[in-house]
Image (cartoon, rainbow, N blue to C red; front, side, top):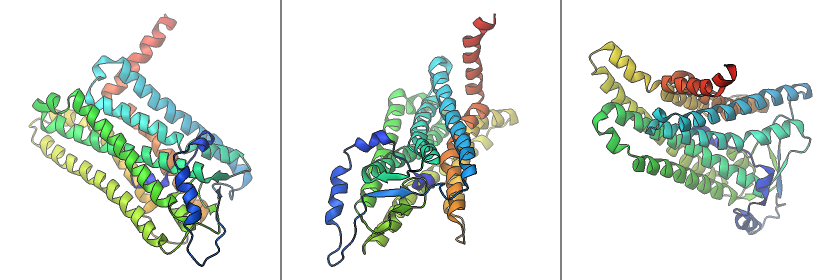
Length: 347
């Protein structure tokens, strides 16, 4: 997900986290010799403050509804998979893990965005900013790794159906989910340490609605800033493009296997098990590409802020809708769950 460079938010309760305090204290000693820098102790998030005031309540209501629907949709998916025994399969285990990462990802971004839309104070401390970046990168990378694992699951199910139960045993699935979360944690910690190892001086205004990694790097000073910026971009893009490459490779083998099925009905039935995952992957990377691969030009800060919400708010909003509508087994499971809940009342 190239878009995890969008990761942004620190809940006020996370200000007390001490994980990054030693790192942030060391910033005082990181200024270059011979320069009398005024060290930055907090940042100001510009966000939507430049928009007309009458639009802010509209944005607040829109983003709040999308956020609540994202939470509700993912919780319904998790509850349905838990209650329906026929959904106790590796594919839906991965889907539950994906829903958890999506809930936590949106929680690391949207609440702060909603608060700032109604607040006049947009400051964020060093520790809060570092915490935000860590958790959003962690959950964002975990989300990308889980999408890759789900692509591998579909590859094994379609190309090696007889060995599926062996290759995708409960133990193997637990390992894949654990490694996805561990990989996301390592990536989040590594990027956060790299960025906050720099010295921040002068302007403390972040032209974003959260601690945007590239915006923070623009505020850093010192000769190593440009090389660190390239390093962060290289690490993120390499990891995310690696995930995309593995997903594409999985679907190359999947399509080859599907084309070898003699009947059209069999081909359609087999491919239908991949549609929801493939659609989410396309949406996921398409919005990220629109944001980060758009041609350079005279884009205003306001337009960039709006474009950033398409990935951080709109994409998570679409994900549970796609899985619920495009996955027949899950859709039927949700219907059964609601019927069991409400049919006694209606009778």
